[in-house]
Amino acid sequence: MTIHIIGDSTAANKLDTKRPEHGWGEFLKDFLTDDVKVLNHAKNGESSKSFKDRQLFLNASKHFNKGDYLIIQFGHNDSKIIDPEKYTLPYKTYQEYINYYVFQAHLHGVTPIIFSSISRRFFISEKKMQKNTINEYPKAALSLAKNLKVKHIDIYKKTVDLYNYLGDSLSKRMFMHLNKNEFENYPNGLVDNTHLKANGAKIIASIVALSLYKSKQTKEIKHIFLKEKFLRKIDIKRMLK
Image (cartoon, rainbow, N blue to C red; front, side):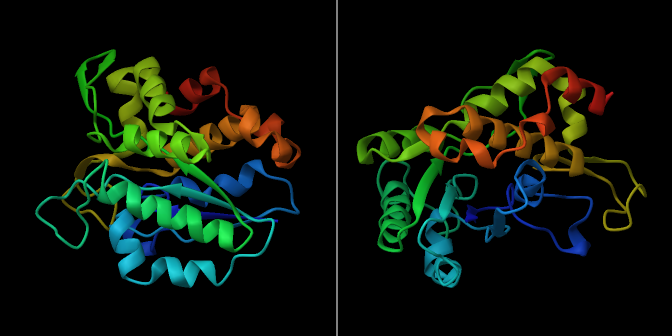
């Protein structure tokens, strides 16, 4: 069995020129048994619209086999109103593109799982995150999944809860907050509250795996997860200190 991922930079594999940036899809295999493969088709900068229009989904679907699973996670780039190649309306075109991926997955005998996007990291105080960090897209994703009776996971809420638990100062260490001359690829440093470093990507991958393991919607694949590898909240705090 193969778990396929389609989505944006928060999940995608990275080029060496982007390091230390990582996507959570790079670490999902760490929490799965040896007989399960992960094919990460997610790409930096893509929206639900551009992923289809640029033939990226067509190319991904060539690797689908009956019995596989497809994780669908878009939203971060769909809100770019100044970019007509990517912009979608949450309860209109965004849902239409996600529905297309669900329909195509079913045609291939693949089980789709709609994810809300992982949250951006925007704090208004040390222990309180800003609301709606990705506008209405997470709600639109879950609304569509429920209407279609498709499996779904609210990763947006789970990541918001995690960041609130960690607080502003500690959660920052998951993200691309880089000092000047700390990394060759970013000599001027960086402050980025969307993209993850390796530890952040592994933490999100653990949340994804644990969520799929615990969900009644995906109980048929519960056996593919290495539950002893899941990161507890206390483990995450220790990783980041």
